[in-house]
Length: 185
Length: 152
Image 1: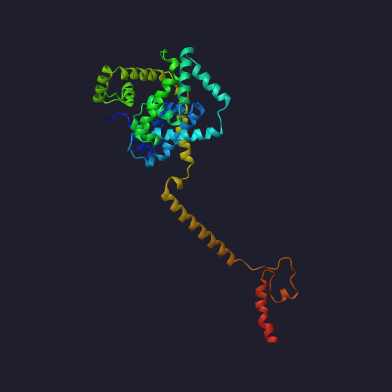
Image 2: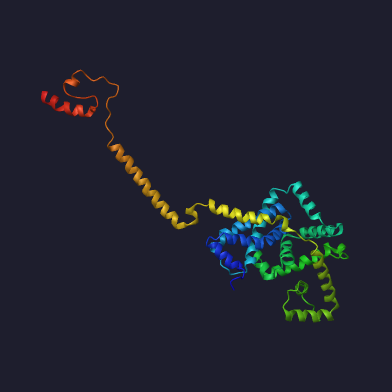
């Protein structure tokens, strides 16, 4: 059908041929999930924005070589995941400024009831306290809806490692959020 | 009774089990209080995790900015980098240009007029012999030499 929206693979092929309008469509289509994932992985909007921009630049650079073997979003998530890892390494040497932290907190607090905001903060904190690997699989599984195989493709870990990390992560989160069991989100 | 695998319970809550496996786990959970309690805990944790919502909408324009940066980046990338074939052509053209320049400069140097003894007063016999100041010193020598050799 002529009016059907082009698939991600088609857009990548167009981008590979130098059609930069395709990049705009891809950005519009995926920017929210790229931002959400990078924010959850990094906990800082400024760094998440950097990752987002860099992701679409990488997309442009890789378009000519792109082969649609895996699902496009899985491939995209792998870029975001790797870039977030790089950002995290940089962040270890360059801690987030107090202003940035305050700005993030204020933003989350806007339009939220105190109780809900408290719960959201508790969840964010609990996820943040998980080990690095558990945190990554939880974010990809719970918030991005990826299957075990897809998480394996994004992170480079085996399916059995992903499953074992998921089980331990959910157990740890249940313990950490035990005092909120009566809350209804 | 063998209990359900915890990972299957997690996937059951996530709604990502295949229909057959979902039926198997569902039937087992109905009969097994241990797994039912575990499933309840997992579901509660799953729901609590849902409270952490992020709103990327306010930051979404950065992606558009990212895309436009990519476009600008594209424009900044020299042609020779974007198209590898152009790189070889550019190298050949540059080599030719350098050769032509060297040839031209060499040619200019080889036909350069000889020094004219600028600032020197011509000797009085100059005009008698029909020489002019513009004549080169070397030509004077060449013209003088046969005469001196004859004298000796």
